[in-house]
Image (cartoon, rainbow, N blue to C red; front, side, top):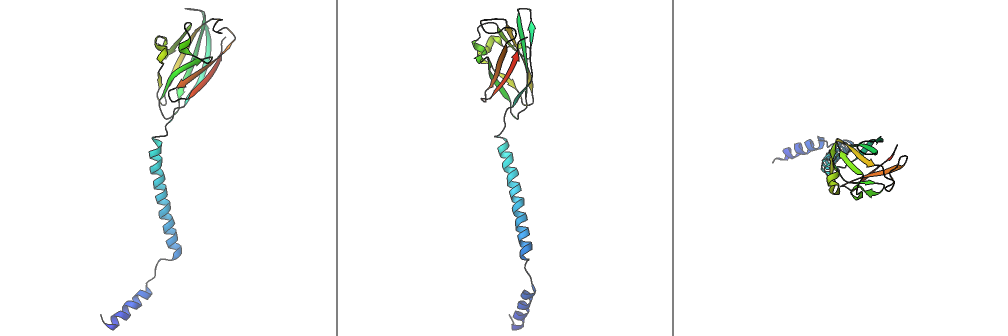
Length: 171
């Protein structure tokens, strides 16, 4: 390399400028934000699979007196699953007593289908966004506390361990 070439190279290097510190900082922060947002979306999609939940709402609950085939009431409970996972009702309590422990006088219908025959292993599935109608037929009985004018407490228990209470007054 010639002596003159060194001088030309040095003068070229002196004339070149690097990025200003302000522009370098802006670029560094922008890249960091883009990476952080990308990681957040990725982690959110992973976590979404593990955070699904059931949420049952009971928009309508009412009781109607019936006189045939027996004297008693039809208690209708309409439920809707507004959660992001399917729900399975595995127990039904009336006045804090599991429905399976009532020996007679109580029948359960789910969407018109009789569930009384296999009430000991109750399993009512409600898909996410789905709904169901439960009808509890109760015979009038003073020994069980089912008389006109009394309020009964009902509670639906799901396989996920959540409980959904409802109350109704017998007409």
